[in-house]
Length: 310
Ligand SMILES: CCCCCCCC(=O)CC(=O)SCCNC(=O)CCNC(=O)[C@H](O)C(C)(C)COP(=O)(O)OP(=O)(O)OC[C@H]1O[C@@H](n2cnc3c(N)ncnc32)[C@H](O)[C@@H]1OP(=O)(O)O
Ligand SMILES: NC(=O)C1=CN([C@@H]2O[C@H](COP(=O)(O)OP(=O)(O)OC[C@H]3O[C@@H](n4cnc5c(N)ncnc54)[C@H](O)[C@@H]3O)[C@@H](O)[C@H]2O)C=CC1
View 1 (cartoon, helix red, strand yellow):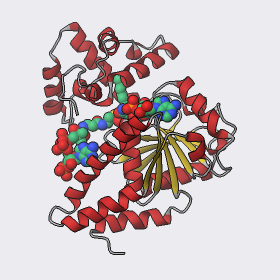
View 2 (view 1 turned 90 degrees about the vertical axis):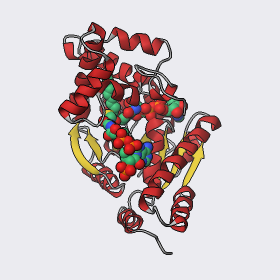
View 3 (view 1 turned 180 degrees about the vertical axis):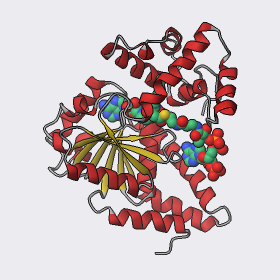
């Protein structure tokens, strides 16, 4: 089989060294799940995406296809055949399913990327714990919930860890690999190897609030929303200031819309409840108001800014 670019060849050879994980189940086909599934398939893994309805899965597949076309165009701007091969190869490794129990019966790694809610995540993992094979590793892509609390819904504490990806997954080069005190060395190294096989740089993080990146990023983003709430500066000026004055690719207000305001709200609410004395985690009424109005950011067409519907 001839692969058109060095990049695809490299991605393939990386995956063949990662014997432990051949089939990946990504639960949640939203913003993050779609990105994780795309990159896993791109790097030679067989992937099944699970979500609650056929309709959501169709949207997820369409968004993966669109993003893959961008990657293909970048890799092979001049070679239409290579682009077509890349698309066919990658899409052939990807399947969609609404029945999580069926998929969990035969998979090496489950990556959960559903709504940021502890009870819902626990319910999900508890429903597949007795179905999944012994060797299967469970991982959560949670932004803010302790991995240990999610893992407590299962009997495989040694085969449970965190794999925290960043949005947009096809572009962001980092994966945080999180271990709880119970995560075994084998599980940790399998997760780290898998992250590398996906072409990412991995860092090891303890199971502390926000791990590394979000512990620093969330207070920064919420301070920006509070600044806007006080009327100290406009959204546009805050964003321009941080882009041009601090070299960030996106300002904090735009980034909140990009991440999803419901996800931001869940994070801040959860941390405030657990750490009420920490003013960095205080709720933001403006954020709550937008979410209650269904303004969830880019994904809903409006947040702090308005967007053309995708
Ligand atoms: C309240 C607390 C809340 C905390 C929430 C925490 C959430 C988490 O748990 C953790 C997170 O993910 S935090 C978010 C981390 N992400 C960021 O900070 C993204 C910041 N933005 C960027 O990097 C660029 O604006 C970005 C890359 C997005 C876009 O770049 P540009 O503005 O330059 O736009 P483009 O020129 O369109 O893109 C640049 C290159 O990237 C390629 N690309 C973009 N999106 C893609 C996608 N979805 N799929 C495939 N490729 C994609 C694009 O093709 C382009 O490539 P080149 O042509 O080679 O430059
Ligand atoms: N949005 C972001 O920038 C980042 C989010 N995360 C985390 O990733 C997770 C997912 O976030 P997003 O992709 O942004 O959310 P999203 O809202 O875009 O997608 C969540 C998906 O999960 C599905 N879902 C909900 N309950 C389900 C269940 N029981 N079984 C199967 N599917 C179910 C929904 O239908 C939806 O398609 C969250 O834990 C979030 O904190 C992590 C890194 C970055």
